[in-house]
Length: 275
Ligand SMILES: NC(=O)c1ccc[n+]([C@@H]2O[C@H](COP(=O)([O-])OP(=O)(O)OC[C@H]3O[C@@H](n4cnc5c(N)ncnc54)[C@H](OP(=O)(O)O)[C@@H]3O)[C@@H](O)[C@H]2O)c1
Image (cartoon, rainbow, N blue to C red):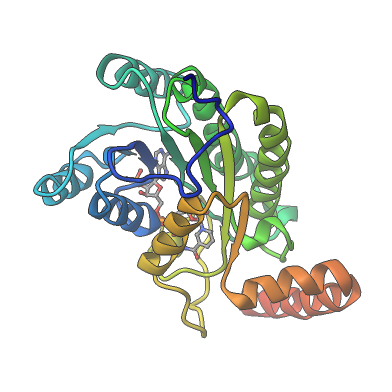
């Protein structure tokens, strides 16, 4: 008997799945790769730093099938190379995790075009264009999913991170629409939006240097664990940490309060960075 596409097991199976994780050379992406490898996924790791990817692939090779491709996701040729690799080696893809991302810090009035474009290229265009490129292979996949790592700042804008907020908000809107468009195709779409995470994200900004955080963020391992849970449980949208959910709630129901807090924060940023 032919099993219809919509008759699926309640939990998405991770073991044996062909997973692509972008931004896997450090931070959340590395934790996602470690977590997925531990659960038996087959992995293709993607980032620019070949040496870091090679080290991670070697470390995970004892327990999982791990490959890597090093390159810049903002370049169309590299996205094409990933598509070609998947066609040649897997002839299908089950989970694409669009995790690679970059932040920035500085007032919008002084943002050079290069900074605005660098953030939009990696945080918005690259995940959408990579997913487009891989869509034929995802459609050949088992219970396929496009999982995207967004940010709570895609729900609530804050000063001095305008283009990052804009890119993550654009990603959120696009994947929301795409989820509906893909509903009949069997390809699911997930958006995971963390708040601050303890990675070196703030040391690799497209521009600007972020002042030190007073509050500790979540660990990348915890974010990875929650993301795998969301994948397994077929969630569509997850905002991580209760503080982040509270912030989204305040921005929705008390926007004036958020505007006030943002104005205070902007004044502080301006003071901190006065010449
Ligand atoms: N950390 C936070 O507080 C936080 C909070 C909310 C959301 N997020 C989101 O979580 C995701 C991961 O962030 P993270 O904290 O793990 O940051 P991270 O430690 O800076 O890692 C970013 C990853 O992206 C890769 N990458 C950067 N530019 C790339 C490019 N042009 N092409 C290919 N790969 C590239 C980096 O590797 P290479 O340098 O080797 O290319 C690295 O593996 C991002 O989407 C970020 O926006 C982070």
